[in-house]
View 1 (tube, rainbow, N blue to C red):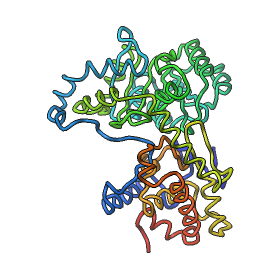
View 2 (view 1 turned 30 degrees about the vertical axis):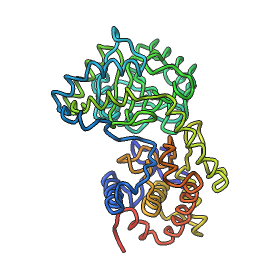
View 3 (view 1 turned 135 degrees about the vertical axis):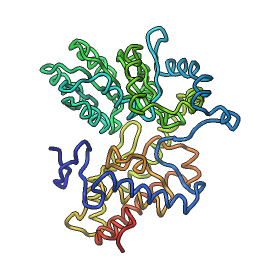
View 4 (view 1 turned 60 degrees about the vertical axis):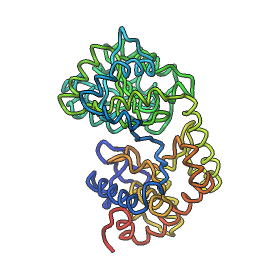
Length: 416
């Protein structure tokens, strides 16, 4: 069983340990409700959305007249399909498209349609698969094996016969899998008779726009999905699935049967987000993030982890730093709770909404700074102000660690 730096075992299906304050998904939702209350209190125009995600609904007032579950798709689905296949590198004579309520819904429906109890599913990325992949495989009764990097995948598949391989191009840690490794994974999977599903959440745009990689379906995979709220698209927070027509048909059917389909009334918004997509926007978001990294590095040194697209403060380091600043010798909380406290302080004291508040539960305990809109950073006051806010909040977490009950009050509104 994986453990964090402090010896805490990771919770089931999560890459971090649970603590006594945020012990469950129910606690995560209570924390989210508290963050919502702060947005209501301050007013939406006073909030700086630094999640790196865009969850808007790009519809004009005139289009709202036809935002109906029957009329919306009737008017827009052919255009949606054409744009989606172009965006993802598909061919209309071979491929089809389906829209899900979330990327997680697309992943779950894929497993329900393609995997039987007792079969093997292998995950492969540069670090680890998203918790939604692990949960989807578990829900079908499959045996899930996660592998980090091509070499581990190669060694695993040599002795296994999976029915499905789940490939993640841009990992949860934002490490990008090299193109030659992707090609080798697809080849080995197909040699074993496995289907390949790519969890291409943000990679569908980051790979081609920032690193010159092919579009999703040009990678030779059978099926794949991306999120429409990620890195150059403006929402809605839907999962766009595409691939072989026979597979899409089966997966779409499962989605409808289990209520995971997207609301068809919003199909016109999908059309709008695909029409406005510009690869240059992805590169601009990455450049802004790098400006923040340049300001944070002198404050945090080697505690700052940088990937080619993101800036991260690992949760273990957040707790380490906070303990040092607070003069604490023994950790009174787990790293996930320290990271949550950091995000809540940024929300409460600096009006910054971090990606921590998007997931219930979050997919990572680390503080992620990614794909920052330049206009939002300018409105906030610039990269130095951003870095100073993170630094000040870290010091405040250290103070709260001396009295864990105050930290609980910060996160859940409970206690004194």
